[in-house]
Amino acid sequence: MRYFEDVDVGETGTFGAETLTKADIVAFAEQWDPQRFHADEEAAAKSVHGGLIASGLHTIGVAMYHWVEGWLDDVANLGARYIREIRFEEPVRPGDTLGIRGEVLEKTVPDHTDGHGYLDYELAAYVDGEPVMTMVTDLVVERHGE
Figure 1 (cartoon, one colour):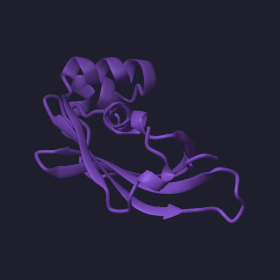
Figure 2: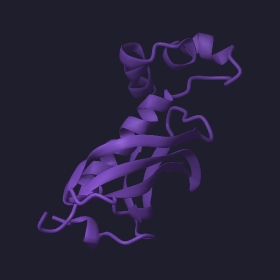
Figure 3: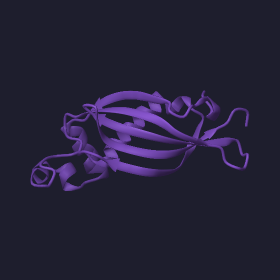
């Protein structure tokens, strides 16, 4: 298990990849974000997107899964205080493969000593090397021996 002191600012990683199929996109949308351009191929073709696109929530969910499996499960994470920023750079379309990357941006130790510190972390999804989603979150991470 890695604790707050074990994580360095600037630390980066890649955390797997996943290809989203039309069936994946529609199934997620039907259950969680049933907007027409996510769930209805014909309506999506008539939208400003010109075709079916994945929900941003779907993209975040895929990124989170791979991040947890590839990095966060090995960190003494106590949760997040907030998500500071979410940006959807480009739409994710059927057949796109999301590659997941992350970087520790900043570390902060609170004035009070209650056994944790804060990590600002950027998590991003890429398609063909270009960002499609970025988010910055503030993780609460346990400190050694506290």
